[in-house]
Amino acid sequence: MDAVPKVTGTFDAFDGRTLSHRAMRRSVYGMWRFAWFGLIAAYVVLLGLFIWLIEQAGLWRAGDGGVLVAACILVPAFCVEGLRRLANRIGDNQWYARGVPRQVEVTYAIEGEGLLMFSWAGRSIVFWTSINEVVLDRNRWLLIGPGVGYFLARHLFSDASEEHAFISRILAQLSPAAQARSSGAYKVLTSLTVS
Image 1 (cartoon, rainbow, N blue to C red):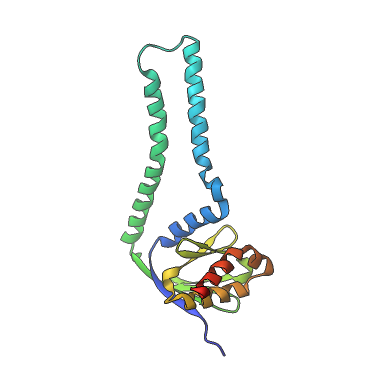
Image 2 (spheres, helix red, strand yellow; image 1 turned 30 degrees about the horizontal axis):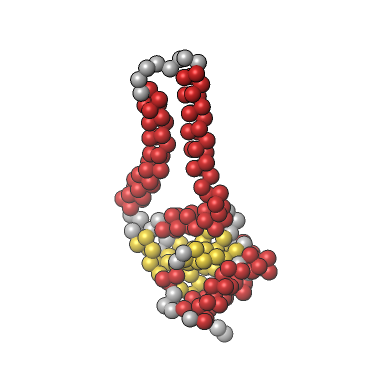
């Protein structure tokens, strides 16, 4: 009987949230992830149109009111990302204050029904039938499920052959449709064997 293939590594406590979110946005949404830039641009254009209409109607007062109005609109729009990061950092610190460790050791094991993930906090299994695609996103493998991404960092593997064997085993468990969507993963695995 074959031993259960598994890999273990240490991560920052909230890496999963950050890494899977970014990777999912890149892999699933593609260029649409930048749509909010278009919304901000449309908002600025509409603001300019309204300022122009006010000027044409003669309702504009003398001075630099247009610059002030634009600054009052644009500065908060660009501060939203900074506020989101600050809120996440404060939230993370609240979790750390409650005893969540900053580093967590996680083990991933390939089992018959799915990919088992376990750490000091618990264990969960991602069933093979729920994985729609496997992609390599920068330095991590992403297993895309229904609205969720599970990641396997490449630093978990001691060498290219271990990475190749582990990811190949995962791909072998997937449905034919998921394997077809994972064509990029097969290309990466091919390059791992060549080098």
